[in-house]
Length: 243
Image (cartoon, rainbow, N blue to C red; front, side, top):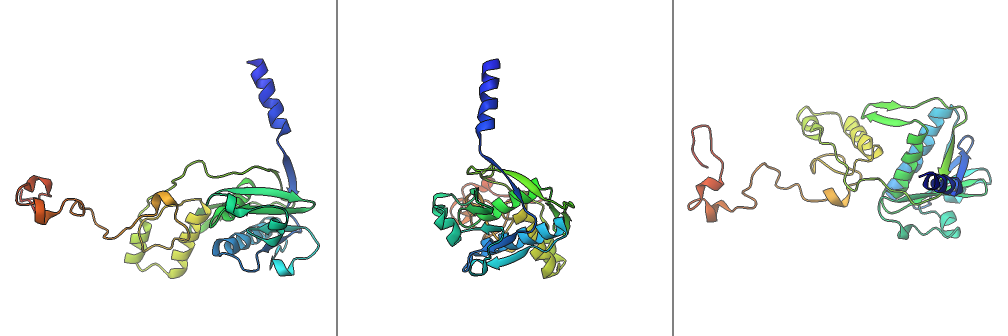
């Protein structure tokens, strides 16, 4: 057991970690970004600014300066450093430090977004609900990052709270509906309730049709074919009548 512990401890020491200081940096996104790449860059700049009480600039790659930059997504800088986003699956991400710069790369469409929010979570920033954020004050936000391909632990991540149906009924303002969609995306939820909700990304496990949306087996057991001979297959009302 002692030998196993020593070997594991030595392996942990050998893993490449990098301590990156996020203060006074510029967030860079591709000149022609995919939707979630731009959203990832915007979130990183926005919440780093709120944490550190300093303005973090967010710019397209063509406007990148010579200072400390964080490159988000499939940028030319990432490609120049031999990072091929096509080799990642949809939800994988990786951090790569090049001199004083940091590359947050990932698979299409959501890998880089998850990479950004993995960093923000580690810094203590969380989306609690669609109208509540936890943003700590960090004058010097520094984080040790490990260079390895990472991904969520579970392929399917879904919390069914029934809110999309309710916000349609009560005519919830569109701004709040959009905030609800962002909360779920920032929380790593990759499922959807129905076709009516604001959904920026849906994982393969949950990417199926929600139409027609009803609690019935008639989609699978045709009443025109089976009702006459097998009424027991079908629902009974309060009076005991099959229908």
